[in-house]
Image (cartoon, rainbow, N blue to C red; front, side, top):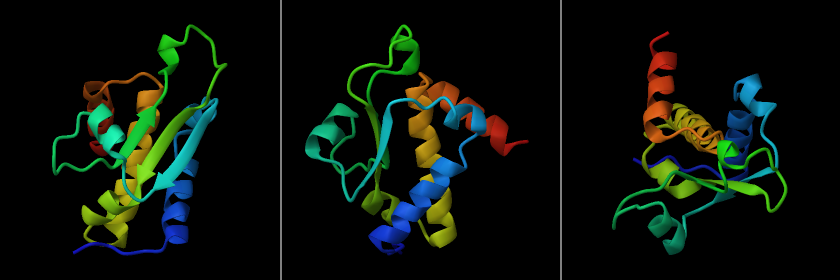
Length: 129
């Protein structure tokens, strides 16, 4: 069963997830825009390596912080949270909130240069504490 909420309600979930980021991460987000879209484009799916029929919940587009050599000039980085895939994978509103929070954290972690292995290690340590 898919959770169906309004665009405004979904935006509030994303805003709450951003507000709940650890202070050390939130304070160090520079030149990053957060966006909500219903679905990723074909180009975003392809760029993220998502196979046919796969789902993309969120996407970080930009230059990870460690690769910038201190520069934050240029176009802002972009984090997009995709509403419909998140609704599809969520059984209820509580699950949707958790999935949005995890997706926002995951994409912010990419901004800070963490790869999937490191992200999962941090998540596992956090969930086991």
